[in-house]
Image (tube, rainbow, N blue to C red):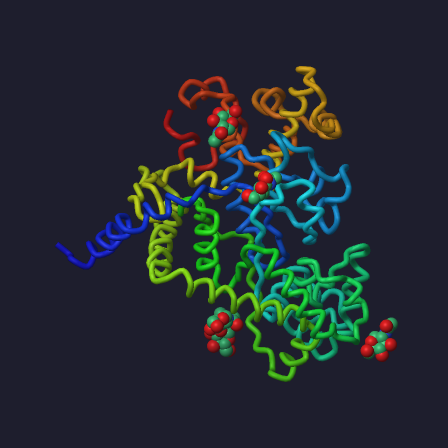
Amino acid sequence: MDSGSRLPSLTALFFLIFSAKEQDAKCEPKTDIAFIKTHKTGGTTVMQILHRLGYLRNSSFLLPQTDINNLYPYGLFNPKLYLPPIQHGHGILTHHTVYNRPAITKHLSENSTFFTIIREPLSHLKSTFSFYRLSRLMDDYESTDMEAMLTFLANPGRYDTTFNTKSPGRPVSFTRNPMALELGFPVHKLQNTTANPSSEDIKNFLQSLSRELDLVMVMEYFEESLVLLRRLMCWDLRDILYLKYNSYEYGNVTVPPGLVDKHKRWDSVDYALYEHFNRTLWEKIQKEGSDFTQELDHFRVVENKVRTHCTSPKDKLPTTVEGSPWNTQFQIDSALCTWLKTSHMCYWTLLRDRSLKFHISTDQRKTPPLRKKPDLFYVKLSRKLRVSSGIHSPPFCLLCGEVQKYCSDHEYVSHLYQEGHISSLQSSSNRLELQGGWHGGDPLPPA
Ligand SMILES: *[C@@H]1O[C@H](CO)[C@@H](O)[C@H](O)[C@H]1NC(C)=O
Ligand SMILES: *[C@@H]1O[C@H](CO)[C@@H](O)[C@H](O)[C@H]1NC(C)=O
Ligand SMILES: *[C@@H]1O[C@H](CO)[C@@H](O)[C@H](O)[C@H]1NC(C)=O
Ligand SMILES: *[C@@H]1O[C@H](CO)[C@@H](O)[C@H](O)[C@H]1NC(C)=O
Ligand SMILES: *[C@@H]1O[C@H](CO)[C@@H](O)[C@H](O)[C@H]1NC(C)=O
């Protein structure tokens, strides 16, 4: 018997006895969530977690209506750009929008948990250059993105104007304090490209953010941030599992110290933001006490199990994850893998489809018009786009064309099962004539 392998479970048992009860007593899982999704910071991975959580709990998401970027930057002010709530008001915001607390609490409970995620500014710049191919907008078309970034850093004021004219109407500079701007730093204080915001402005900004946000996650410490989030929300560890995606590789470049200094001056609010919230993240972790590290280790072990299971090409029998102070016992099975892998575009589509169905059936029942009628744009569109019949047609879906575009058949059938449209694969598969076949794994959880 390998005594080493017994140790974690004994430790877990200890905490099960001494801390689980204490946590249970004061902890109610929270599902009112305002996640301020910043660009190029790992936000899509966080959004994916929130999509899964809220989708499976039937939460009402504040959703962009026709374009995934409808809420960005100021879509919350325009009712044509988002869908009305199902239930009494929206529960979750997770799509890109510029942080504006009053605009958000008009839709969400004032008691929602507000959080965001930031990233080390130089690494943020590299990612931005690479993702948006900013080299294309500079003089030397031949250079790689990372070479172009070095040229840019030698003279940022000259090039940033070029970048901005390419995105009219967007308040965001790609390179100059982009995170601070998305978190509500006043745009007018950054319009002068030669002057830096005063340290007083920065101080006020950081103070109000510290007061208003319940958590600022840091991409460099993603797992630590997730564990803090789990504790803050009283969720189960299962709720914060993720499969990383939407990450892009970029060239490996060393930026000379002189250019780093220039970047620090150019991007001063973001550096201050990062320094402040990286510090407070670690202060929070200190305050959590010694079982934080134990939870983090446990989380990493479970994450590995999940990743191995869900990325394995062959069907596997479900694996059990034993209970711990941080999670109840659960199965890693094909349903969990499916909802972990579903892309944000598919979630967005399924959530809108669910929302439209709700509104349309509400209208048909002639209930008092509690809420604004959604635009029938989508219903018309889906009729036009309808490519096949069977389950890819009403009443199963309304956005049928988009469902076909963004969700695999496997995801969609799992969705129909989730919604109670079909009771089990066994009884339905003969009737479902899907084109393209299944996409890996058991299509459905066992009946
Ligand atoms: C969500 O809605 C579906 C369909 O109405 C229902 O079967 C399911 O039990 C609901 N889930 C939760 C957690 O309320
Ligand atoms: C928010 O919380 C406060 C204090 O717990 C409570 O009085 C208030 O009713 C809550 N507001 C909403 C919209 O739930
Ligand atoms: C921008 O700031 C610089 C330095 O503070 C100042 O000299 C210049 O007049 C400002 N330009 C505008 C348009 O405000
Ligand atoms: C990046 O380059 C440095 C020095 O050239 C090297 O030591 C490092 O391993 C490289 N990193 C990656 C991720 O390729
Ligand atoms: C974040 O803060 C920690 C603790 O102070 C420090 O060790 C680390 O270097 C900081 N991380 C970055 C990327 O600056």
